[in-house]
Length: 282
Image 1 (tube, one colour):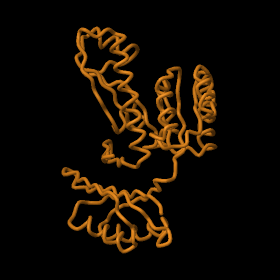
Image 2: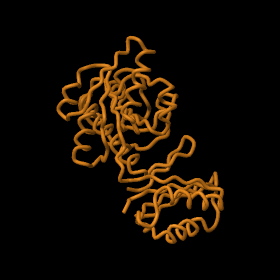
Image 3: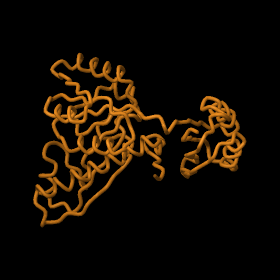
Image 4: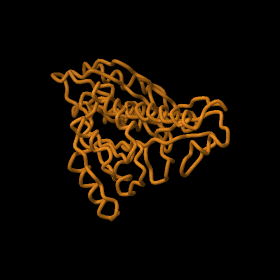
């Protein structure tokens, strides 16, 4: 028995849910969870189905054929994911250890269900952490940007990476890699109201006396920090907070929303629509 997830997208119209559920029932596929969403302005229908597939009845490839025939009836598009197959992850880091530790510990306790294949960094500071968790560490020398880009692509291909996580990786990712990993590369950044760009954003926020700080995780695009948003959170602060306390609160938020985004991606709970995401419930 395989635990699968199905994504369905089509123009909104009557009878879509019954059309697909009846087809799944005819294949003896047991639906565990079904969620749907309609984008009213675009009149688009999105549906996520978790189900159990009896492999002696039909295969995933056989299911794809049946879904394709059903798609043609509503001009839809569907995808099937094997939820039991662990995705291969590469984590890119610079010098900050806490986001990396958080991901590795949660993966070790299976809160994040993945194969972390490699940790890649433009510094060697965090190599002892990779040794601690018995994960291969790759140093990326950025003195020659063109060579580094080819080296990074080679590592990702060699390890058959499904998802890239930027855990406070403080470098720009080349467009060749961003485009190849569209909707498969997740980043985290602070999200103040107002936003403070450049160095020492928490210091700038403290100087302005902000009353709320936040963090945002998103898919990476060629536009810096402009990709489809997956997870966000905020916390209230006031004049009693020191800069150090504000930094600690912000960093905690960043780690939480990054892990939330990783889990949502690995559980196939995200469907993208242009620059928006539809993130289904856990």
